Length: 211
Image (tube, one colour):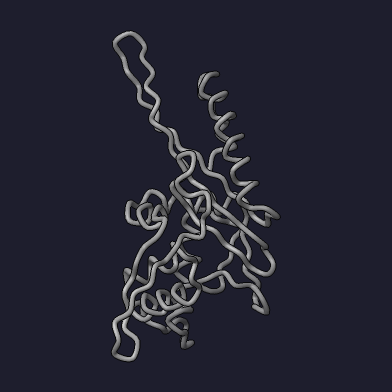
C-alpha cells in the first residue's frame, strides 16, 4: 500500500489512486440503503462526507482520481474548497512527507520477477523557494491545476521580555492554468509580498475571509 501511495501522490498515478480507493472501500462495506455499491463507490462516499465536514460546500467527488471526461454526474470544486482540503491534509505528517518527496524508488513483482521503478514528482516547483508540496492535477474540464504549499523560517517577535513565534506558511491554489508552474511561481512570490505587508501592519484578519 505504501508504494501505491507514493505512486498516487508523487507521480499522480490514477490507477494507483483507484486501487487504493478500492482497497480502503472494501474494508468499509458496500451496502447502503439496500443498494450494492462498489468498494470504490464507498470510498468516494467517504470523500464527500469529509468534504461536508470541512465545509467544502461547493465540491462533489464522483471518483477517486478526478477524471471528468464522459462522467455523470460531473465532479466540481472551487479554489476555496481545495484550500480547505489542503490545509486539512497538510496537518497530517504522513501526507506532508509523501508530497514532499521529489522521487522515490518502489519495487513490485511482475510474473514472478522482482522489478524496481523510480517515481518522479510531477510538481516541478518542489524544493524551490521553500515549496514542499502539494500536488499537480489535470482533467478534461478543469485543465491544468496546481496546489503549492511553502514554508519559511518562523518569525520571532519580541516585546520586552515577551516572545511570540509566528509560523510562516503560504498556500497557492491554481485551477485551469495555461502555464501552471510559471503562474504558480509568480503567485507564490506575490503571496509572500502580501504576507510580509500583512505581518508588518499587525496581522489583522477579517473573520469573513478566514477559511
